[in-house]
Length: 399
Image (cartoon, rainbow, N blue to C red):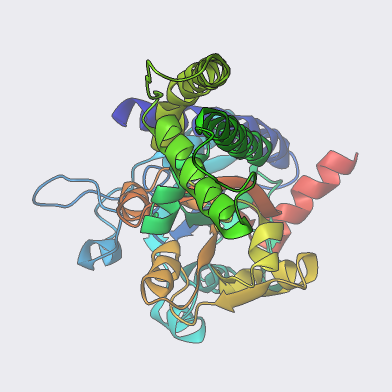
């Protein structure tokens, strides 16, 4: 697991550095238009390992803000602070330095459901010059501040219970029939019935021929007797098939022995094929009733928990879906809490915001959830910045 997380961390860092080059290019040329600036940036929340602080006592990296969040003397660590340091160096004096602070209490009151929108509010109010974090570029936030070029496109995936993680007893019992298709089982039943009827016919002819002339018996039995004999023979041949063997009657006629030889050969082939495939089907998870796609969730009438900031985009992209937008602080843990409270049956989860969040991934594993390959929407991620700084960058790029 640690190796996988490290590979994911390296992959995301490479993608972010690619976006960093674009931002660096803008700000490097920005110094030709503006005097040297000292940028004050706020941090909306911890997003390990993108941006976080360490506990002053234990030195452990933190994923949830506490009293240390409001202490500006405790430095931030992570990928984004490293990017900002490189940005200052690449500006060649255009950017004097970048200092970090917390979002204001007033903005948190104005936007209680989103710490990220609260951070953008501080830019609009002139308290800071920019915000550093994985910000979704939404229409609401664009009205409050400008944004850098997108660093990466975030993808919102469908997260569902692991297919086959909870199998019912009938589903487990039904697995014993999976090695053969319906047509093959029909062929097996037909051969058993045919063998049974032929056995009754051969036995009846033998008994009539062996009767002495002194005993007067009807040449044909009544229908009820034939029906009873047929049912008895079918049950007998069915037992032979299930036990993978046939009876050995030394005194049987040649025709009956030939019939049993053919039926025994059929049993040998059928049982060998059945047993060879049985283990694979018994260990395979049953996907019946499982949902692995957005269309499947919609068709099944599933409710889907999602971030309230994505209400417009998700409703427009998937109007037939039944979304439940969280009314809490709206980070991904809150969405998981709604799922735990059984408010929904699936989740719409951001990959960039959760793929490296160890605590969230642990909750995904504990609840036996999986990320599917179904994508609801893609959202660009960028840094909100003061409009006058962004304007100079845009003028340069357009020229």
